[in-house]
Image (cartoon, rainbow, N blue to C red; front, top):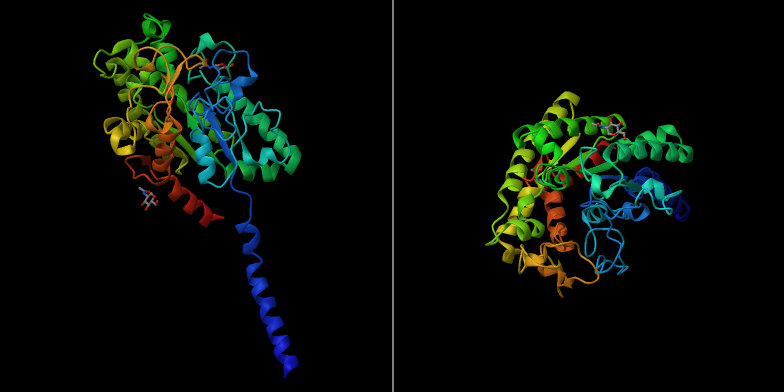
Length: 370
Ligand SMILES: *[C@@H]1O[C@H](CO)[C@@H](O)[C@H](O)[C@H]1NC(C)=O
Ligand SMILES: *[C@@H]1O[C@H](CO)[C@@H](O)[C@H](O)[C@H]1NC(C)=O
């Protein structure tokens, strides 16, 4: 009796173990890889390895980062990619040019973004040595070859197909191209009305190439309220009103981007591209800063001149004591606190913010497919 009880319970435990076994490795499987492409809003330090002035490599950048060092992120602490990595349970992706990006670190993903770049190759030309969008995609190809050498071509394909991708482009095609100087080459070539469809059609080509390189879940951010950043207020605003031309640019760009993404998805027969309405996300806390714990959404925390919006954030700039009270960290970039609000909406926003669905829905859908 005792014997058979014992056998039964061993058998039972064995059965439980057996039935659990298939789940255990999955629950403990590495989080999905994450790839980032774009400009300074999402650069985590690539430009530190390049001869360019578009760098965030001196204090007080990084003042609230766990390292308390300037990491190359254009933030007082974490940036949007870091906060997304946290939400998907990954460590932060390393900049592609980092010498630490080797071996197992490659499996986490990589950040190819480079401050100053745009959709067009001639955007950010004054920064000379930056990783322009086509080059970011070349590096993505090179990355896949490196990972293939590590885990084989088929597993690499899977890793890339299952990955989450973030693309942030477009703001610089206005600020650091069309409107960079009066009578810029592009503004002589195109009216704003014609420039926007032109850059959207170039953007489409880049996104299709990303798809052809294996990306299947791609968050694509629109531009924020370009005319309302402290740099523009400092140059164009008497009473704190946003610069109308750049606001007009953003209001032309964002809906056309949405349409382009919807068209691409239709053509591909799948919800590959997800439109992130960063303009609406920004507008929420800019129109009612107090509701989000901000004392101002007009004055940058770090900078100088009106709205702290003149020039760059440097060791000689004014720095606010409480960075969480400012929507803008420097003249162009959100504070970590503002980035957290944006990532909250990326996670759980309604279709007004995330088209066709938010990241929590994507994560739930994709985990069911595994
Ligand atoms: C941008 O430059 C790359 C080479 O660096 C080139 O292959 C590509 O065609 C250029 N794109 C446009 C739109 O001119
Ligand atoms: C977004 O995410 C939340 C869960 O956090 C979900 O309840 C909601 O329905 C989602 N909205 C859309 C539009 O996908």
